[in-house]
Every structure is written in C-alpha cells, then in structure tokens.
Image 1 (spheres, rainbow, N blue to C red):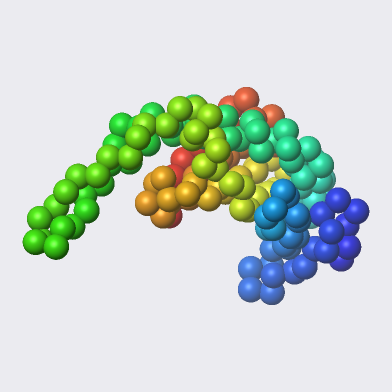
Image 2: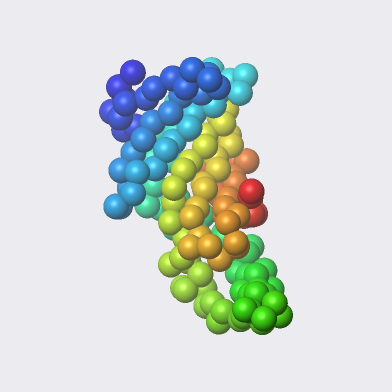
Length: 153
C-alpha cells in the first residue's frame, strides 16, 4: 500500500505488523505500525501525525531522554574497566556530557506506533550505554508531556 506521508507500507508476514521506511535527515527510519486490537486506520492516523511533525517530536523526545538519562550516564555509564595486557583492569572515564552534548549523540533509527495512543522512539546513542538503545515512550499519543525515556536491550 502506498501512503502520501509514510510512503510504501509493507506487511511484515512474520509479525503481521506493517512497516514503512522514511527518510529523515541522512538516515532511513523504520516506522512499525502495530494496531494492537485497534482499527488499523487509527494506528495509521497516529503514525501520520508523528511523521508529519517528526522534527518537532524528535526534538521533544530527545529532551525527554536528556532529562531522564543524562544523569544516569554522567554518574556511572561514562566509566568502564578496560583489560590491560598484564591482566589488570584500568578504569576509563569518559567526560560527563552537557545537555547539548548528550542530545547530539542521539540519532533516531526507528519508531513504533501501537494502537491509537502508544509511540516509541528508538535512538542510536553512539554506544553511551554500551549497546543498549535509548527508547522514549509516549502512552498519550502525540501528547509527550508525560513521556519517559529508558534503556532497552
């Protein structure tokens, strides 16, 4: 199916979800539509709203990630032990990040739209959290005032 805003939407035969791939900046971002007991049209409308205002929602979601996870990074995830040739461990400390620096490390790589209210933004974080993804979740549709960020994976 072709959609004016989302482009080509394909059916994932394995999960039954529908997936669109959009261009965003220099990246390709997968948008997964999962009706979850709602009419597909309701999920599609929510996805349209997200993608139609993606610059705005990406900026809001990054701010949520900064508010919820920057201190977590700066108080522990920025340090790790590195094995030395003699078998000993050396603690390596990366610098603490300002809000702007933390935000610059986040690159949107996927969006899940579930039902008519749930949106998840998945971010690449330049390995700040050692391979975990940063996920920003809104359970109130396009209203991100109660959105939260967490680590996934």
